[in-house]
Length: 228
Image 1 (tube, rainbow, N blue to C red):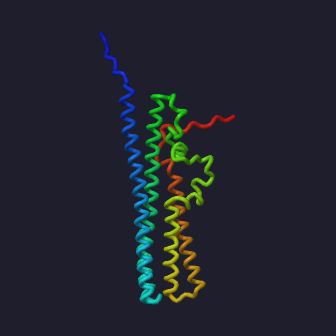
Image 2: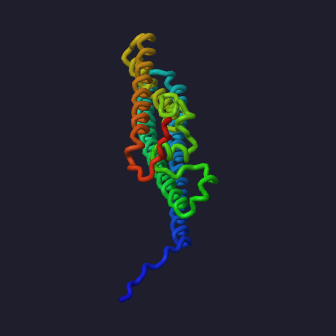
Image 3: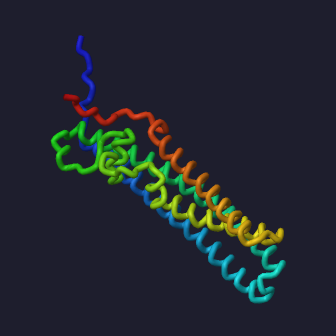
């Protein structure tokens, strides 16, 4: 009695499927970057429009009560748009991390078919946090500020967060002026508003970065370096 042998695995078909998925993830990453820049442009457009409108109101009211009322309302809208922008940028960064993990897994599959190609790759084939950062050009051992407050300031959410915090400071200062507070109290209110909002934004961004690893369970983790 003869038994049927399974058909041989055809590497060309497997590579074609993997390549198609790889290009799909690349296209998705491109869309993620486009949305990130689009969100930033929307926020900056709203901010610029508000500043121009407030300049016209200031000329008409000479920084009186009407100007303070209009400014607080418009800056509150800008603040809302800014917070929503920072939140969405953090979500997009998290999505981008997942796409990188997916491409690392596909790269691991390539190397399973042709391990001799491993020396030619500068990106990682491991899907843990270390492998994803290496693919994005961020070696944890070489980037001492990675994941810290200093690194947060050079990211899109961090830079927009500073602007949003300045808007919050302006709202707090205008509120103090509206209640007739002296200049010292006004400056203190602005400083407290700026520090509170910026601290919250950086804390949320840092927590989001720290949670990248557990978000996707690694199947092909980076091998541990041998200990001597």
